[in-house]
Image (cartoon, rainbow, N blue to C red; front, side, top):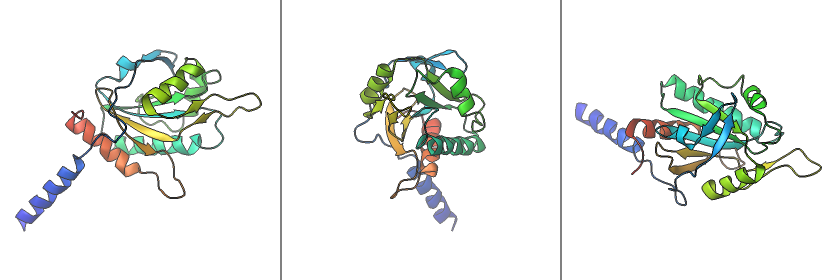
Length: 199
């Protein structure tokens, strides 16, 4: 019986460690410079050595951003409960002309339970964030056009390892066919934190 339990535990642990780079990723996040929710400079070097979850949002969003942001909050709540420390969340505004640091800070005021691990950034040109999104994550970002205050962006969350390598993506909210994979995201972050970057 003891042998069976040991084998079962080993198989579970092995399963948790089987995190692989998703097809189409494996690239290293390109250099960027931004302003965070506290008005301080945040750049690529600040990400080194931690596991990161990245998404794209904007504060005037009337559709996908509220559920995405709530889901990110739920993920961080679970990570905090598990005592996982060496991670961060990076939410990048796709409407930098409107999203000031103060607006971004207020946007997650009641949802951020991370004690400073959740960074929200702005301060770049709309074209720069659009190019950055395509180059790194192969996703479209477009600032609002005349006659609307709604930007366009993807709804995925992205997992980045300690060497700024992009590992995989997840749906950021429920779809008609899939449920938001909170447990999978938490497990993957924990695996990278515990085992280190994928080689």
